[in-house]
Image 1 (tube, one colour):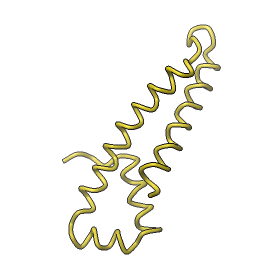
Image 2 (tube, helix red, strand yellow; image 1 turned 45 degrees about the vertical axis):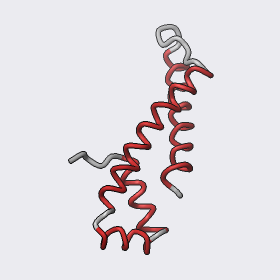
Image 3 (cartoon, rainbow, N blue to C red; image 1 turned 135 degrees about the vertical axis):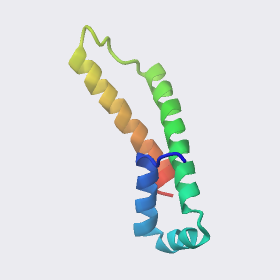
Image 4 (cartoon, one colour; image 1 turned 180 degrees about the vertical axis):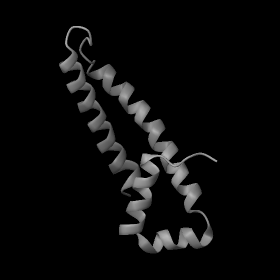
Length: 92
């Protein structure tokens, strides 16, 4: 069985804290694990797609020439992608 990743745990915590009745039903029906794995997988796939699109739109600077600029831009891209995923898949 696949391991639950970051987004799966975030979804679980969201359901526990904000949609507890839904979470309890999933536990009783034994569907919570499958749901969390699906959300985690979808989020990771979506993360890759959005990151590629973002890098096409706003390419990262040359890593050799400007390491700090590259790190700053890469971190900014990652933060943007994570915010989108949280709003689209986790907190719904």
